[in-house]
Image (cartoon, chains in turn yellow, red):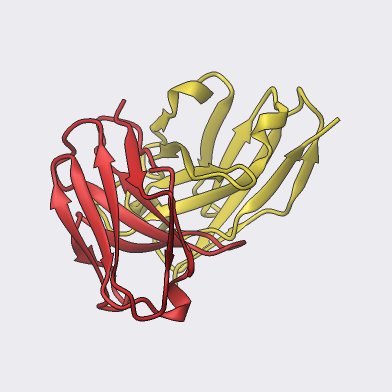
Length: 121
Length: 108
């Protein structure tokens, strides 16, 4: 069965960087794009961007351009999301999500369990 | 970029009620719309995609309709497990995959 398992919670100081991992199993990793979605405490869902696990092409939400980098390691079927220059308003649960089917980019049928990133001095 | 709105933001209902949530896009997204359910502390769960296609395993009391800029999610008979927050999301690949602000369905 499809599983996305994310790395554990992180506490970072303002200005630091964080790198969250998302290990996939149960399917061919390079057949489906991975997106990252975050949710600040008590707030809604915010799409951050996606990466093609096949080509490595990325598309980021404009407001995060320059601070976010999404990568993959196909040898370990793992996707990564790095966010730099952290601010207090980056405190959120970060989710990785996989497309439901090939050809349905942006329909998130599978989700990781979420990683809480807390930014605090 | 395409903006998504939802109404109402909160909905109080009783078990057995018919519930309808509306989602509007700032420009036409054809049928590129999905609905998700989220419970506290959990990842979102896909309910519907392509505006009206029910994801496998989702109960048939959930249905979606609409196209262009206006969409609805209907729960025909609300069950105790349905108290949650619901989000719409467009996935037109020419624009960021924006989510709506959410509709919380709570117990009346």
